[in-house]
Length: 217
Image: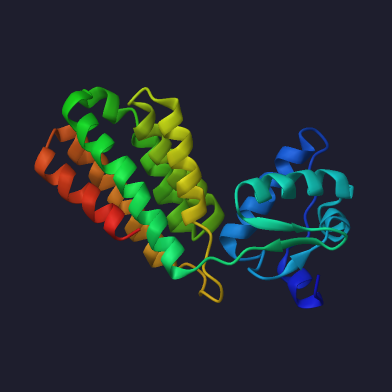
């Protein structure tokens, strides 16, 4: 790994329990935040040293990221972060819309207001992360909100597929500037507005917000 690439990754320690899971979440956050740079090669031992663990849990976490399509394994070298393209990002947005829009609109007609009100904490979490300008935290809160909504459909396979697509859509494009806080705040506001429309049972506003939310993803 190049010295410049090493410098972009903050030094941090992780607890010994559930080490692999903690490393995986830390690497996912680094992907979203742009600390793991598309095209760069990262070795298990170097990343292990940075996290204060052996190379083994790092390699295991990286193998999971390879299954998710975030990196590729390079024998005897490490892992290269794969590059996204504008077309791939657009395709992900299209597939997400095809899955989530009809489900959300169906749920809007069947789920009672008090159930929607129970999701206010999830919407608030996105707003708090956006206000803090914390991109990795916002990415997780964003996915958590969508998972909470889709889980009301009672289809766990849908939730898992949609969440995987959502995660992939959050990886930045090569050379893209860091996500602006204003964009996070605007996206979080859409969550809150959608939820309030769902609570109010305003189906026309719900449909408009849902379609707008995915067209801007």
